[in-house]
Image 1: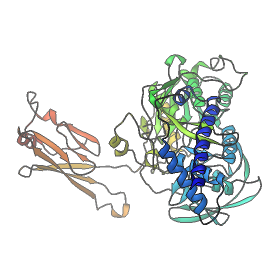
Image 2: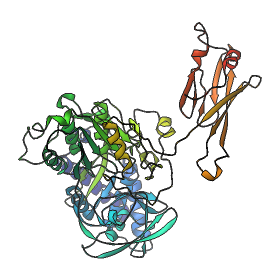
Image 3: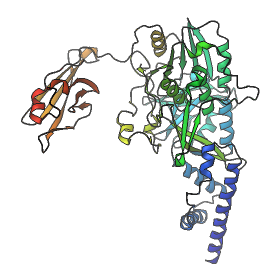
Length: 562
């Protein structure tokens, strides 16, 4: 017993001294100002003796009683990893290999296949998107594919670190990836390459300047500026393509916004950390010491003035959403495509020692108008599906992820009401962004040229909606008739019915209670599929402010959608 007490005392001492040492190391690194201020905040109470004792006892039990010996390093590493993983989907522990991998990805060069990997589904990791001009993209890997096997070895329940070890290897070596698509397993043979990610591509499409950004890396702004300066003359319009761009560095996103907008607009993005500590970003901080303050000032004037479209989709996340949100708030560009991913949080890498560290969420970020994108995403000004026939890409958004950080500016029910991903069939068709067959790109071009924009999807023609009432039952019934999308059944219309009720109040006022999805009939307006048909107030005399139940039902009539 005395030995156990002595051992626990030593363990507590190690924990407390290690905490102090780690804090000193963090303070000596380049931690953002708002994060550093929270590290020194004295309002947070340290862990109690009882909490530390519980952890120490669990550690001792595993160390002494587990069926096989486990090293102290593994136990500590796993404990830290579990602690970070339960916070949110983007906080995690970084061991020595993870730190090296993170540096390679940030600098844009590593060996492998060129795949952005997302969260798990059924024990398998899902592909967010293949990186352009990499073995994965050339082999036809699609967003949403599940990685089932690598060279015949099952990836089920593997950690991300373990799977990355299987995927990466020496350039020139062969690899067989078994992916699951639409419940079918497909073997894809590839050869690993040294992945040098080109984060910026550009070209002239007639008289329109097209820029595609695949990631926000250290060299992205520099590459973008070089390609801008290579353009001769003044383009008619600009298209900035951020589709399937998973994000990257915050400072780089600020620089991209500054390239295309008036510098006098002010704050581009702000972050709010713990204890409401706010930091604002309005200027790009060059990473190259040779770049001066005039680096982004000597750019062509047309960058700030010609019409501009920003393309986004469900794969546009984080830094991509910062750029799209800022340009939307500044009214500098028209946002087109699908609703974005909804990752509105900031992660900071903090060292624990000389080889390991943690990546931890430290703040939420906000657009210039104060909108939080977290779990909501950017809603396009003009919604256009991935292809003319409908959406191609379908995978979970931030709001679908377990333990995701909530949006602090919107009620929880609004975050989930119309924001979850629509699970659609993934086609075998592969979109080549920037090509002549790129449907969304062609619609962006049409918009800049003043031509009609095709929103895509299956068009609904001759839609009719009828409303009928049952006065005695105090109810109203809506029947919506839609044409079928199946040519073989074109004479069999798709009929949906729903009911919405009125309830009497003490003063005979009509209170509305919707009881079916996609059908709502408040006293102010009739909505079907979120489309306002006609305001009820227009059907009543101007002196009737609160219609009674009987009068409300008497005035409801058969209506047609606008």
